[in-house]
Image (cartoon, rainbow, N blue to C red; front, side):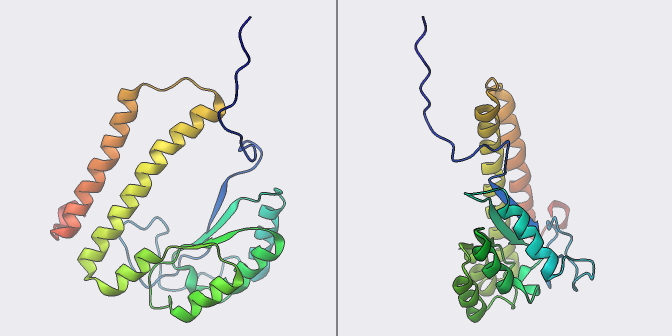
Length: 204
């Protein structure tokens, strides 16, 4: 008779029933024009964006998953282009949803607005990029920005595989395939970093 398998960790909730995180691209508006931007940013807000009432309804839907609610990340474009950002952050706290904000480091990111967000209950802000953008030359700032994106991408590749195996009770994938994926990701990151740092258009 085999011994019972003892769990090495306990999940707070089942990811098959509700997500760990919800990321909302709240607007495409942004004064920056980063080549890598997945949101394909534009200078002005689109009239088809969710208005404040619809955004609050989205937060209600996230809260309906129950506690602990998924982390709700507001990004863009530049989320600070939305005048209701602080109001939505406060509403998230009201309905029991933790709200984090991922700004783009534009001039709209001021100390006053950061204090307002903190008071409204924001649980996280991507401040490193904002600080670097204000103090470094554009080429150096982009290189640091892309390096951080590369680090985040590597973490996603590694942990998504780990969670998929753990939650689906799937067999461990061939390490050669995993290493090849990581090598491909990092080769691309190094190529883009080199192009930006050395100002080589062919590698940007």
